[in-house]
Image (cartoon, rainbow, N blue to C red; front, side, top):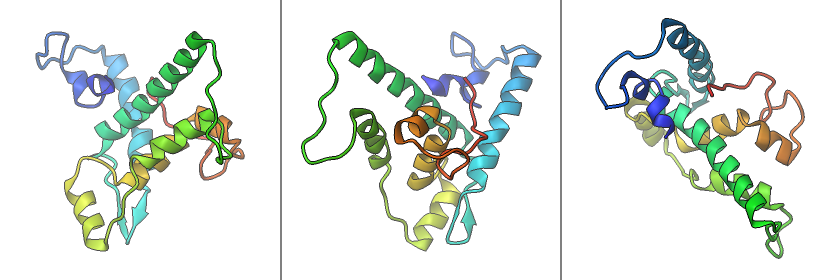
Length: 163
């Protein structure tokens, strides 16, 4: 859903026609707020190569919006069920912590230097580890769930947000 309102999807109207349908002030606000994502992801680096925050912007917006929507839906489902989710035996994590751990797990990957360079040169997605770091750094829910100290790597004071 968030792709419909990212840097590309926002350029299409309700019937799928290419049309700049946003007001100038809405477009200006979007561009100003999305620059935060461009800068944040553009500062992620490995093997001496930086992620291209402009090229990956749409996917980064979608990852951030998707995590927020998924967590809100999870919390609503828990509320509607009336029962607190069970913890897993042998794991010292709350159900909310497990939600975020599983988010990170889906992007678990290994890159060789050549593979990383290829990804940042060719892919519209940020490398997996930065999809996790960037999205979770922007999530107040994650920081609260794990009690991340203020102004720490995983809980920076300046978080990127569009919606």
